Length: 39
Image (tube, rainbow, N blue to C red; front, side):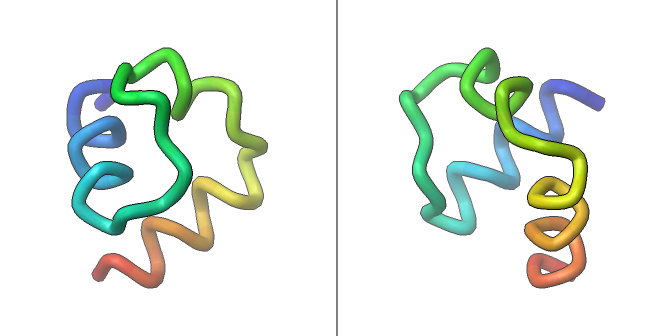
């Protein structure tokens, strides 16, 4: 799941440091919104 999240983040174009670690730092609510927008 981490891999998919990282890929999704880069696809959306949201603030990303270029590594999956960045996505892990995001709050759960933000991650949820990002996923909803992506779908």
